[in-house]
Amino acid sequence: MATVRHHGLLAMKNPFRLFVVLILLSGLPSARSAPNVVLFVVDDQGLDAGCYGNQVIQTPHLDQLAREGTRFLNAFCTTASCSASRSVILSGRHNHATGQYGHMHGYNNFHTRPDVLSLPVLLSSAGYRTASVGKYHVQPEAIYRFDHYLKGNQGGSRNPVTMANLCEAFIRSDPEQAFFLYFCTSDPHRGGGFATDQPHAPNYFGNHQPYQGVKEVPYRPEEVIVPSYLPDTPECRAELAQYYQSVSRIDQGLGRLVDILKAAGQYEDTLILYLSDNGIAFPGAKTTLYEPGMRLPLIVRSPHQAHRNIVTSGLVSWVDLTPTILDFAGIAIDEVAHKGKPYRFHGRSFLSILSQPQPEGWATVFASHTFHEITMYYPMRVIRTERFKYLLNLAHQLPYPFASDLFASPTWQATLRTDAAHYGRRRVSAYLHRPRHELYHLEADPDEVVNLAENPEYEKTLHSLQRRLRAFQEQTGDPWIVKYRYE
Image (cartoon, rainbow, N blue to C red; front, side):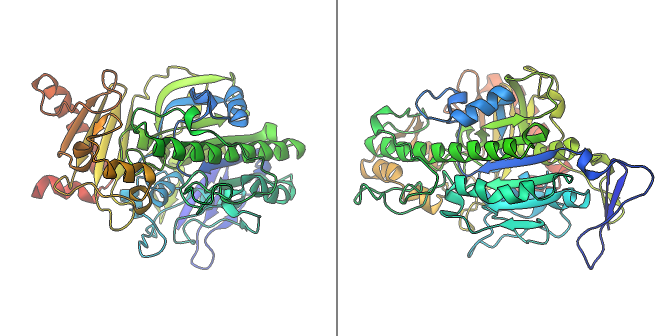
C-alpha cells in the first residue's frame, strides 16, 4: 500500500486499481488549487541552443522560455542512456535502484522494479489528470501509468508541432482540474534514413520527410560550431548540420505548445521544465559520463518565481526532477510511503533556488551508468563537484563499448578510416581503454583529458571523493557495492 499526502488529500493503493483517491471531506482545497506541470523531455540534445551561447543554432522559443524563467548552467543526467535516464526522471531514484539499467525495447528488455513509485502515478493519486505524448521508453506500463496516451499525430514523435496540437484537447478538457503533461520528442536522436533533397547523403537526425506545421531550418556544414570533444572533420560538420536542424524543429514544437497554453488561459498557471535525457548522439558524449554525455540543458519556468531571466550555477541532476515537481504540486515528499514504510527519493526539490544565481548547498551531483544496449556493459559511478570529477570504471578491463548507431556514424567511421590518433582533444586509445580511476580538475581541464588519479598532488582530493562516492553507493542501494569487497 502506498500513501501520499497532498494538501491533506490522501491516496491509497490496492491490488485491483493502481491508486484509488480518497478525499477527506474537511474543507480541504481542490486538486485545481495545484498548478499544472509540463515536463518537456527531448532526446539526445546537448548544450546546443541560443540561450546556452550557440550563436548559430536557431532556438528562439527556448531562448524566450529561458528569459521568463531560470537557466541552469550545471544540470546533469545521472546515466547517459535513454530508457535508464527516463526511469530516473520519472522516479527520482538512480537507475541502479530502479532496475531500469538500460534500454527497455527489443532484445534489451530491461524493466523497472515493481516497488518503484513513479511521478505520473503519484500525481494521478493526488488528483492530477495525466497524459503522455511522444516517446515513452520505460516499462512496465503499470509502474509508469498515465491516464491518457496521446497518439496519432503526423510524423510521430519527430513532429513536435503536431504533438503539441494533439495536446490541445487534453489541456482544455477540464479547466478545473490540474494536469501533468509529459511531452517527449524523438528529436534530435539519430535515425531517419536519408535526406530527401540529398538522396546519397546519409541523414541520421530525422530530416528525411516533410512534417506538417514545421518550417525546416537547414544549416550549412561550414557554419556549425564544432565542440572541442568532437573532431573538426567534414563528416562531423555534415552531421552537426543535420542535428541542428532537428533541434530547431523541437523549438517550433515548444513554441506551438506555449501558444496553446496561452490560448487556453493556462500558461500563467503552469510549471514548464525543458531538458534532455542525455547528451548528443555522438561518440564522446552519449553513453559516457564525461561532461558532454551528462551536462545538459535545463530551463525551468515557474509561475511562482519572484525573479526571471535567472542563470543559476547550482548543481542539480535528474534525480531532483520528481521531488521538485511533487514539491511544486504541493505533495509532501517526506510523507510518501509504500507498503507502510517511508518511500525515499534520491534527489531533492530545487524550487527554492530558481531565483538564486549562486545557491549554497548545491555543489555535488552523483551519476550511475551501467548499460545502454544490453551488449554494452560498462558500469561507471561518478561524483562531480564544482571543481572536480571522479569516475570509477568498474569494468575498466573491458574496451569501452559502442552503441550501434554511434559506431556507425560517419563521424566515427571517418576516425577509423583515417586511423586518427585523436577524437576531439581526447586520444582515441584513451577513449577506448580507460583506467579504473579517472580524476579531472574541471576548471583547469574542462575537456577531461589530463587524468590526475595517480598524481600525488591530488591524492587527498582523490581519496575524499572516493569515500563520498562509496557512501553514496551504500546509501542508494547500489548492487555494485560488492565490487569493493571482491576486487
